[in-house]
Image (cartoon, rainbow, N blue to C red; front, side, top):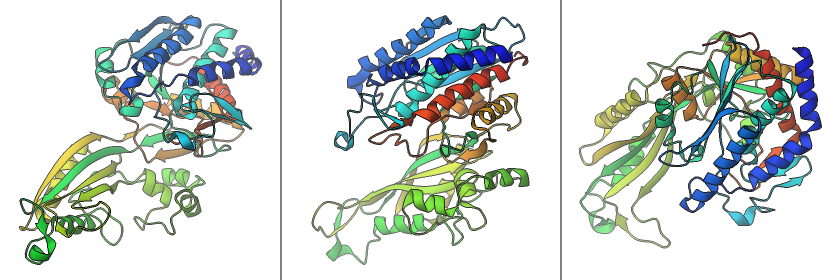
Length: 462
């Protein structure tokens, strides 16, 4: 297979300019999923992706309608009856480009400056989608693929994938695979190839404290009526102890411990205190005392206040004692924590600590569990070897602090794990003005995915 592998790599090298030109064309489509005015652009982007797959000779290429934006599907089979099947995930939708005045060039006109390609979606994640497609194109230039590949490219990731679960449930047989490839998690740095083997879950709430039945004059009633804003602040302040631990009853009961080997691997990450201070601009770090920063952000659960509202917050002054106060609260969860259980823990906390002078309500908004993959699985090992071939160093393994709902959906509905990787960088400005893609890293990404495909030859079919 080495001859075919080398031929595919040479094809990618010789066609890099062509690949880049097609990516630039893809980036000109303003496929903003959150804006109804761009519905036609989403449909155009879906058809564009389907055309790419069709030109490669994939079978069953289809643009499936959903309750929102369409899903693109295509597949190709290996002549080897025992070949592994990999489900490749991606999304063609992008974030809005605002504030437009902060862009140095038009957000939907691809512009190369130095080693970077600037456009909305360049990094997140049209560049990653194209890396996957162009890796397959390179493999097919050398002959038949050594594995079966199925592509699922959606158009609603940036709005929470509201219709993806139903699509997956309705197409379980079509999407059946040994595991998924999700190139949407990125690298720690340009010289640090990275595999993300764990993603935290999420449980998000809106909490409200009510007092009087209308806003009151703070001069007349202050001192005799408990201010709901003060009561809520006191409740929130009590949700952490002096060691930075969350105080919800039973919050840590299901939290999985970090074994010594994993702790050692996490310790390899170039993400110490200085890294987080530089990234955040804060003067000092905060959190659980017995854990390193990288452990706190990936392997430990958290509770954060995302926003608060109460009373008068406009310009000038208004002496009001507000009738109510509200806060948005999110918890990031680790493996074995259940969002519904955390909901009950939050309710129990309010029940035990809310004074009789006010009333509370807790509303669960969204929730999804954490995910973790076996670092020794065939897919992860194939990716590790592929990255080592391209970067000449072993990749770093990390836990990601954020959540990627599709990984959970694949596990819950299809019962498959995901290999989470990607070739975006921390300074790519994803979701921000002047989003970019580092082109040398993108090229390396294509080569990595070529090696990944060939590394999976002679696997076991599901």
